[in-house]
Structure formats: structure tokens, C-alpha cells
Length: 156
Image 1 (spheres, rainbow, N blue to C red):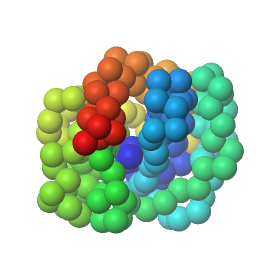
Image 2 (image 1 turned 60 degrees about the vertical axis):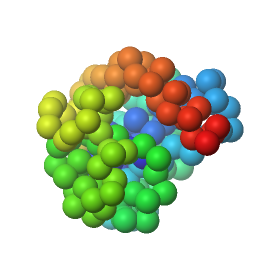
Image 3 (image 1 turned 180 degrees about the vertical axis):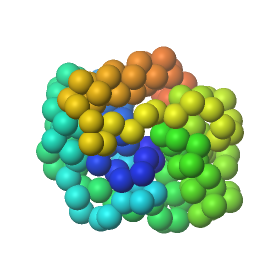
Image 4 (image 1 turned 90 degrees about the vertical axis):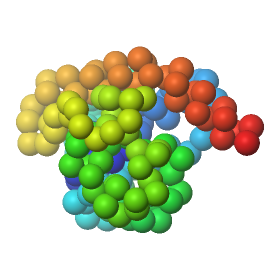
């Protein structure tokens, strides 16, 4: 699960990008989802998030935002947050989630301090494209570690 604030930009773009990567690497073996610490349920991804994600042939047209809940935290095997504040919110809702929660740009290093993925909300398509490419860069850099964790879960 990816976590951001409104669940209409960063986390859905990360969700869509990882889903594309995993469909190639582990087809049908994973469930990738996202949520927001300040989200309202049922809102679509922003128009620019949908547009930026097309760089990787992602289809986010059916995305619906959802608020972060203890149930979603419990359902997740791995939680990647876009900012330290999101990390803190996950941990505040479920202390037991600390061992599976990471700041996205620090993964796989533990802890919630470090650099955030800037929120493009209200900015230009160029900023969304930049954010999507940054997310893709970090996913590519950490794909092997994500796959190892998936394989451990599958074989457990």
C-alpha cells in the first residue's frame, strides 16, 4: 500500500506504476493499493495524475480515493509513505505496522525520517510528469527488494 495525503496524486501514481511493473514480474500474484491520511472516500485521481501515469501505459481512470484506516494497514504486507507525516500517521494508527512501513524514498531502510516526494496537487502537468518520473525511478531502484518480499510472502 502507498500512502499520501489526499490519495488523488502521488500514492495512486505509485500504485499504478508498481502495478504495471508487477504485472510483468509477478502476474496475478499481488494486490497493490493506496490510501490517504486526509482523503475523502470516492474521489478520482486528478486529471494530471491520470495524464502523467500514461507515460507507463497506466490506466488510473477508475481510481477512487480512500482514507487510511487500521483495516487497510492490517491488510498490507508493505506500506510505502510519500512523506514523514504519512509514516507517522500509519504508525499512530497501528504500532505493529512499524516493521512493514517505510518512507518511500528511504526504502528499504527503516524509519520515517528523510526526503519526501513533493505533492504536485494544484501544479502544472510538467510537475506531475516530474513527480511520476521520480516515483518510477525509485520503484525501479527498489524493484528487486520489493520482489524479494513478495516472493517471501508467496512462499510463506
